[in-house]
Image (cartoon, rainbow, N blue to C red; front, side, top):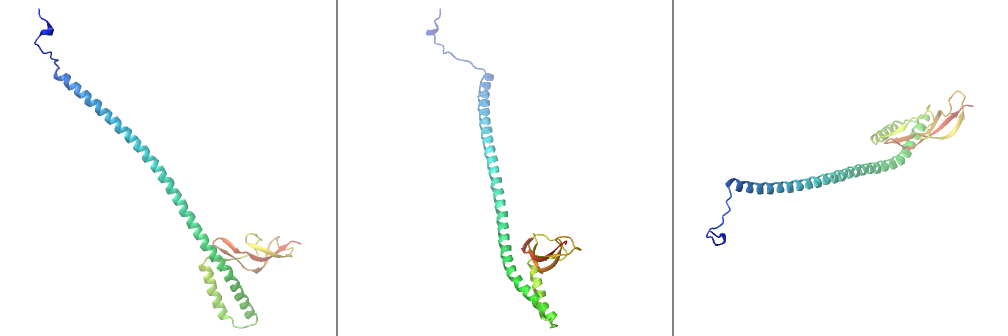
Length: 187
């Protein structure tokens, strides 16, 4: 009888080559899957961050474009306002030249010099987009005209402009000086 505890034999656990490869391959597979999962998680986080940054960038770009448009509009309005202020002062001088020309013409005095000055003034007004408001024969519009007298005329419709007492002007689609007019009333 032999006693296993007294035996000179060394216990050996025999593993087949296939079993060793399976254990190794299983360990590698588990490690690879965990690494892929970790990388996938990191990729999702980075995609989320990238998406958030893209949204922030779009908002900042929209804000910049709005600010740029507003700044451009403010600059244009400021420049147009100064042009309009100057134009109003200039129009008073222009009106004086027109009245002087009319007086010279009525007195049969040569007004060729005034005609050329008025032509230059008209070119200047046109250059800065300042246009006369034509009112004679039109229907009164408080946006463009200022009525200072009323006449009774049964042949005309109510509020027909019968006389321009002072020319009005528009600059950049805004009235800078309304036309002073006389309007009709049916009697």
